[in-house]
Length: 83
Image 1 (cartoon, one colour):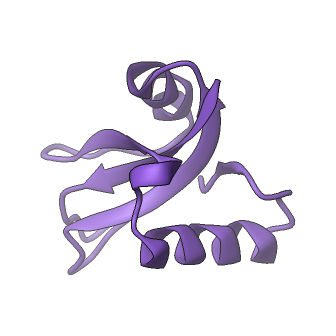
Image 2 (cartoon, helix red, strand yellow; image 1 turned 90 degrees about the vertical axis):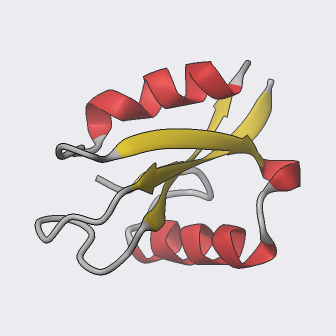
């Protein structure tokens, strides 16, 4: 298995104002599709929003740094879901 960065796409005033994309999880899964299936029940998606996943090795350094900092602030050990 490998780690996937899951990203929520689509701006919404309720959870993602003025932001077209936001990393919401770093999880271990066998495939990108499985990573999305794991995360989807744990995050809010409004109309026009969707999730995508990219292998950790293909994610940008900026996205990985941001998600790891957010997980650390919330006391999650290096992986998890921002709900």
